[in-house]
Length: 391
Image 1: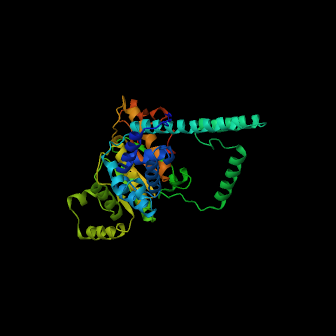
Image 2 (image 1 turned 60 degrees about the vertical axis):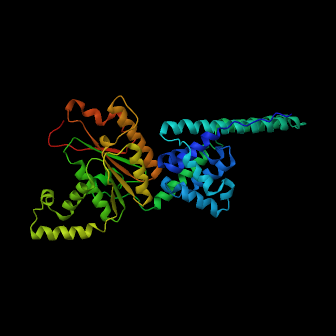
Image 3 (image 1 turned 180 degrees about the vertical axis):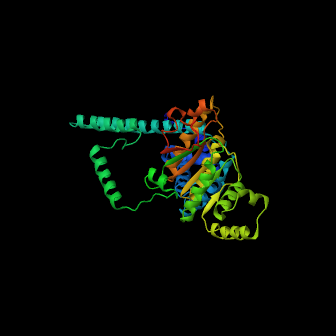
């Protein structure tokens, strides 16, 4: 009786990763960006995850993923290969892998199994090549060494020669000479000058101030200026209700004291101004979240949703109100983690992100906004507002 070699794999792990990708937005994003469909061992799992990856690239989220995967595979005539619609639906009964840490561990393990299988294949081919080398022994050895080196690197094109990089850079500079400035103007000329023309894609801007100095009002003013130019604007307000944000916008656009709005103390002239402002404001392409005090994963999901509907800039109010499932010993560590995650989001979404942050009231603690260099590593500019006195 022959002994058959079972290649390294973990079918249950594959099922749990697919289950998470079908049910949860964060799990979908982290899993798709960490592994390839080719890293799966089971052929049906490869087919399903490939469909998931294709749909993810089209901004299809986990809430729609199951039906879309079924429709995708059915259109390709491959649905029955994976057990039909019922076969895919059964993944919803599997224990899903969710959470950054769990997904990191699971995908790393899956990639290790995949690399081991590839190594076995390379080694088997090496035996055959060596046995049939004849007089080309050195060439065969060099070929095998190159294949093994590729396995160690993980990817074939992990380095770029400077000649190619220089050529690509010159082409990029040449395009920039004649390209139209795609920065989004903030409506504040001095700030636009500091930002090189306005808010640019994949940039993080932090507006920082002590409490009650006016950073939220400034954010609303900037967002309104941008919306008036026809850009799609997203505001994630984690401290104030969306109705409170809208009160500020109405007050600014109508030129009416905000207290008069909330108290209903408007004369006829002010009421007419408010209605005219409302007509203009109704044309803005602006979106504001409903819930406040969101966790970081919810903020990231909301950001992806805003971009999926066409938003070109995202405002977040504010850093201290973003919750974290992870536990940190200090606010410094927590804020550092959140800022780094938002920095990663700007790269993923390719839109400018404006984040509000609060400076401690105590003079001796004013360095908290600097976070000993942590924030500055990830943002383009920290705009600190002052009152008339220095602190």
